[in-house]
Amino acid sequence: MRAAALGAAGLLAVGSSVSVGGGPPALPAPPPAARPCALRAVPGVAMSEGFPDSTRRGPGAEFAPSSGTLRALTLLIDFPDAKAPYSAAERYDEFFPAVKRWYATASYGRLDYESTPVLRYIRMPRPFSAYGIGRGYGWDAHTQMMRDLLKVADKDIDFRGYDLVNILVTPNAGPPADEAVLSVTWTGASAATTDEGAHLDKVSLIYGHDQSGSRVLSHENGHDFGLPDLYSADDFPRTDKLAGQWDTMSLDWGLQGDFLAWHKWRLGWLADRQISCVTARGAATYTLSPVEVPGGRKAVMIPYGPTKVFVLEARAAVGDDGDACRQGILAYRVRTDVDSGQGPVTVVDGHPGTSACDFSSGAFNSLNDAPFTAGQTYHDKASGVTFRVQGRDAAGDWTIRVTRR
Image (cartoon, rainbow, N blue to C red; front, side, top):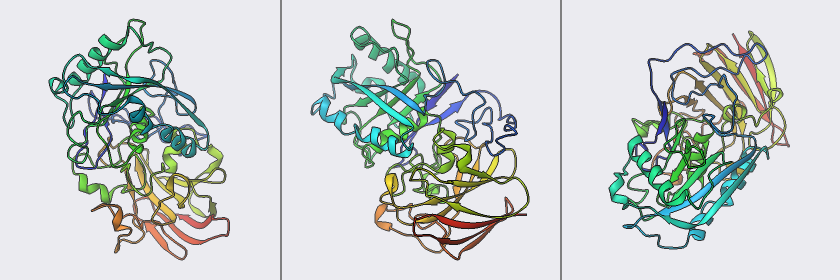
């Protein structure tokens, strides 16, 4: 049984990681011959960065559909000891339509996020204090909450036909988000079943007022689609040496909040023709269009083992990255054999001696200037890849020369 155990591991951390029962990771299946860079998910790895062997979506599937129409049921709850301080409509407006717009932009219009709200607070039958909700709270507490939710809501609400359920908790339940991050997503196992047979197996809960605003829900729903946490769950400051602020699955309040090209490809938002997969030795020149805008080639990917790939993509200060600190070629390594929250993505710092846009955070700024710019060359020892950034044209596209030895 899979259960997402969200444990924000430090202040400002957001999101959950899925813990998978069973033994050590097994060897992944090889990628299809026609898609050699689409590394397969590693069995036994929590929310592996690889592509799943099964593409099944819909009721009973482990993850929600990431393309087409997503149907989300959005509920609001409060408690006898934490009654909502303002209306359900006001709480709902903190997230919608912002989340819908965010995903429409990130997916190039390929995901139509339809949220159906029940615009009243559902009063839980027990006080908030009775559930033992704290940082990293467990499956038993979640199960009790979901069963109690159905006791008071199942009669009036039809849960059938939805791909996931969002629960917006009254913000005065529990400590402020800057003291303890409680927001969590549970996927892969049903905590409760309705009278009509609908399973609560993909549920995102939002607590408090997070500094990321609506993007905390964009992050949590990313788990519903199968994306892992990119921050360090055990040593939160280490996040600044992993993915930093370069993906909402890392730091959802970061300046560069769009998804990485690897994630967009996994979610079906990028076509195979937009990915240059380099498996042979040699050198070639590529032109990359920024991942934030539709169309064009988006990434060069170089696999260097059954569980590792080196990725090059262009990033710009537009779209969901409108507040980006720096623009250029972002380089990073993806590992499909590393658990969510343990560093499956590591960004290469193109300017290791400096940080940038330090106003964005008290820490986590060293990778804000990570993109490589015109004239820079880098050799990655692990993958044997060398690349040189040749320049940027008037349209905003970047040209790079990539050599694989």
